[in-house]
Length: 189
Image 1 (cartoon, rainbow, N blue to C red):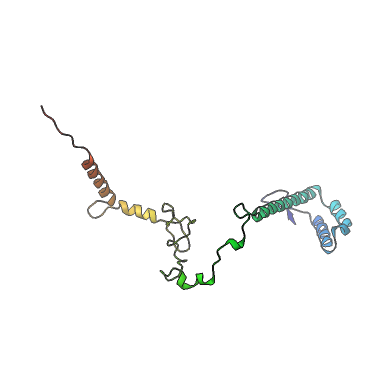
Image 2 (image 1 turned 90 degrees about the vertical axis):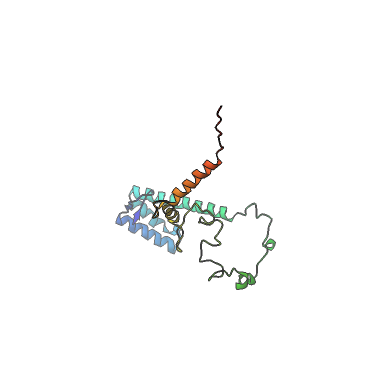
């Protein structure tokens, strides 16, 4: 039987005789109560070395600690929030089965509610290119991974004239700046 005193990568092995005594005690405790198995408990303490007993004690502490954490998490999850205190289910406006029929759903695609088109009518809390255009995502439907990089590459790619959209935009900006600058009149005396 393997055991570890703490969180370790390599477990320590319990000696075979000690393991047999521990199993005897566990079988006895499962059939009867632990109070009836005092002799088996004593034989475990006599046969097993100290480091094994300390490891078992430490392991029990870890399990108790984990159980306490689980209980606290459960209690936190089950507490009623301030928003819901004093409210009941009867306060909700309940929907009927009619809301789920085809006539009440969007019908602008093959799937009536566009569930398989992640870029259209997407969820407001999802990090996708509809709600957060600067973010890219990848999912089982494809996503937009690499779209921004491709757009940037196309923006700077030279055409047959040796110019790109970037150079044309820069030239347009320079012309706009020149036309917007105030005219300086040359005064000669």
